[in-house]
Length: 135
Image (cartoon, rainbow, N blue to C red; front, side):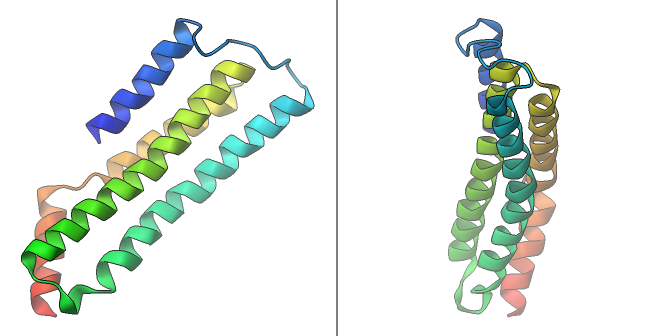
């Protein structure tokens, strides 16, 4: 999770340093609307996808995994869902700077908030391994 937050902070720093051009897209233009829609859709689709994809792929094969395989699977799917959320957040930050639109910043904050929910904690891993051992 810390890596995702650092990547998003790096994107914000790039925007503040004008590496990501600020206000490149004119306000209330069709391009701004398209960028905002893309950021919102990516966030709205990305968050449930990250949560559901993880659940489907980790519970589906529990019966055939030992502890090492289960930990490896848990790690892989945690990285995948963090990647989905990171892409949504970084794209939204870029939209915020390109279009100077608040909706991009809001979408980035929502995606970052979802990383808190998706952060693999020791209790989640223990619970997951207990489920593996029950099967």
